Image (cartoon, rainbow, N blue to C red; front, side, top):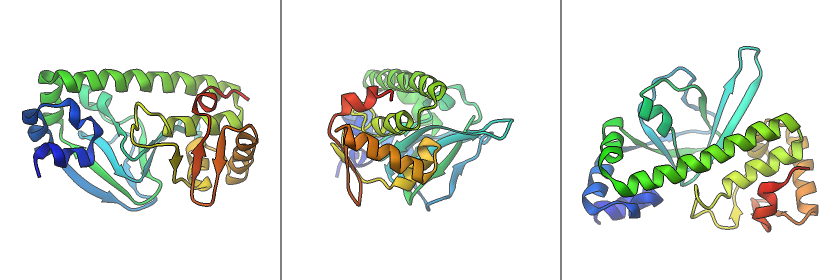
Length: 224
């Protein structure tokens, strides 16, 4: 198996690289397992690796000085994150928690910076990634000011179905109502009611093992 083929197992952006770049990238990545409920890092830690979720689900969150819990995003299989902290070589400003058994790919900073400085394909991917994340965080501010639980659930689901960040996700995702409630910062009961509302609106279908997006555009723009 070539380095590029092996890298594809960990990162969908492997196809944007040349063979030389893919070989360098794969050598700079280690894999690590985190059991459900464990911390990948705490706010203030120096996690100098660019991070990809191979399998599992990670929550990016923080506790304010007033003690309020804030969830910024959930990162599912195929998602890569933390490029801002790696570029600036700064401590993390959030907690990373594995919501289920999770396997991560960790690219060391030296490899990341080499790709950043030399690879056109890698930089094109980063621009799309950062642009998509910016849109997410603008939506976070908007929805959090509205404080509508159903809109918050819709927002988090739409993120996880995002075809730019997770091109292999498809229309159906395995996720529990408890995991979704944790991502949206809601109780399981309220999250369940929100899912019922979204299902009645024809935006999703809920089954025992997961959720199917039937109208992703309407789900992403849902505002209550």
